[in-house]
Amino acid sequence: MTEPSLTMLEPIEFLAIASQLAVLTYYLGVLIYALPLPIYRLKKWAPILIQDSIWAAILIFTYSLLLSFSDSLAGYSGISLESLVAYMQLVIAIVMSVNFIARAFITSLSMLPVSLHHVASVILLPIHMFQYGIILSSTMVMILALILIGAKAKLAALGITLIAMPFRIGRNAGASILAFVLVANVMLPFLPYWIGLILSSIGLAYDDIATYNSTMYVNMWGTISDQYGGYPAGGVILFMKPDDPDTRYWFKVHNDGTYYINRPFKYIRAGDYIVYMEYLGYLVHLIPTYVKLPDNASLTYRLSTAEYELHFRAAENYVFLRPHGVLIPASCKIDGFERYVNGVKLVCLPTNSILQLYLAYPEQCSVDLESNASMTLTSVELVPWYGILVVKKEYRASVDESTRLEIKANVVCRGAVPELQVEEGVAEPKKSALVELLTLITFFIAYPVAVFSYLTVMSMVTLAVARLLGALSPRIIFDY
Image (cartoon, rainbow, N blue to C red; front, side, top):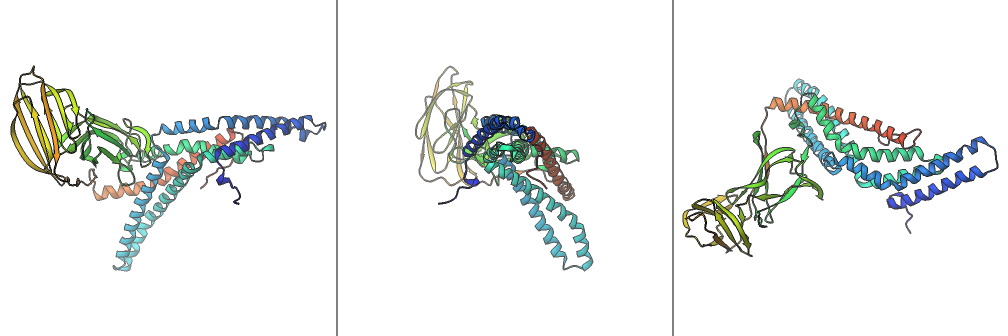
């Protein structure tokens, strides 16, 4: 039979042990009080043991409250520990790539005169040193974050158990462990803010350190639908900076109307954006049109690779047809709507004497359009759209503005529609090679300084909280 170990115990089992130790500590204090021995060194432990048992009981009963309070404070950062780990992994990957390029450059210089090779090695030596500093600091943060992700609850319960031991045998270690869990859980998610503060103070813009306004990268997902419960069978969602038209992000919308900006290969920087969707050759206006990320997104953690969630709805006059197609009645306010398996029926009130109706669908499909108004087909064109040939039609009708128009559309697809051929990506302003090099060098120097200084502050706060929890000689659980 396998012997039980600390890693096999659950937090509730640690707390059960702590409660028994607290009771034992209390009775030991009472027993020492009752002993008919006037020995000061022994008698002084009686009130200490009773106080320690009461303090341990308070910590046991407030265990969940302490962790919940710590998590709620960390939540104000808008960054999860998982996101922090992903960011550190990205930083390490970038540094390793730069290191590989630098080494390849030095190797290529070996074919040149020896003097040039040595000069290049001397020039690149400081860069290598700072690269190792970035890797070391990022790895340390990753280790701390992974410890909290995997064993936060157990470590907190273990710390309380050590505090509950009689005669303060484990008080220093227990208070230090508990303080580390509470402090690191709150402070680590705020590390990107500190990095942004340090780097911006020496002249690096937030966009140079992948930090905008409130957070580094935003990973999110969501759905796109029309006002009537329909969703597009594909498409592309576009995020554009209102003050910087050269910065754009575009992501694929899947056949179920969902989009994913998830780790590790997709991201969007936090900030203000205008959002559109491109579907079957039309630019679909979405609601909300203007978003501020991540403030307007919900932090739900429903996906491990995309903690934020943001859903969009098309403007009122866009109707998504299933299995494929879009119907856009212009100058007509939709007043009634019914959806069928392969079609829709809508009632609309004209806002103009000339009704315009736009229709688009893949060439593998056909749409039967019926209306109580005499509609004239004014244009038909076949246009390519991300690997799909799309039929675009425009209808017009002269109507009385008091007439209730009924429009019915039925979709029939004769064959399979090709998969959407779109490469998700990012378009950001390009910088000169010199600016990129100076930015990289400054980042290599400032980044490890920012991380190590933050860990120093965190260690000091941990020591202070450990003393508050009762440690006489607290120890730093992490050190460098």
